[in-house]
Image (cartoon, rainbow, N blue to C red; front, top):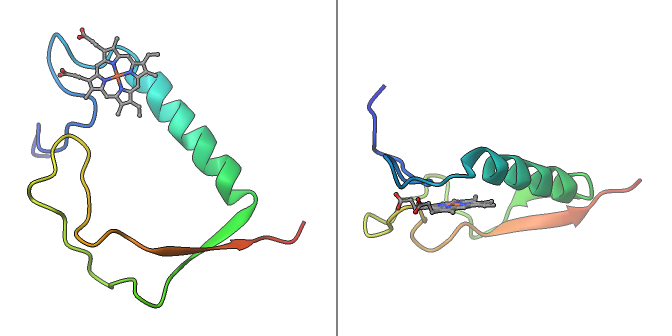
Amino acid sequence: MTKNIYLPFGEGPRSCIRERLGLMQSLAGLAAVLSCYSVEPAPQTVRHPRVDPTSNGVQSVIGGLPLMFKLRSK
Ligand code: HEM
């Protein structure tokens, strides 16, 4: 696998000291949202989104990634 292409937490001696906590919190937040909502593509969502080559650190998609959140029945 090619290393050092995707660096959301940096790399080396000054990289993020709480990478695992950040990942765990992100997953917990995602699980909390998905427990309440179903997520679907929106009418304007593109099938093959293009990554913005000028984004740094955290990747972003050109034009964003519109999604539909539908409240799940309990
Ligand atoms: C998704 C969540 C997070 C992301 C994406 C993130 C990302 C980053 C990045 C990119 C850096 C700079 C690395 C570098 O300069 O090479 C950094 C540094 C740092 N992060 Fe995070 N971080 C996250 C969560 C956290 C959390 C939860 C904490 C603490 C509770 C934390 C504490 C720090 C500290 C103290 C540094 C400075 C390390 C140093 O300069 O030696 N981060 N983080």
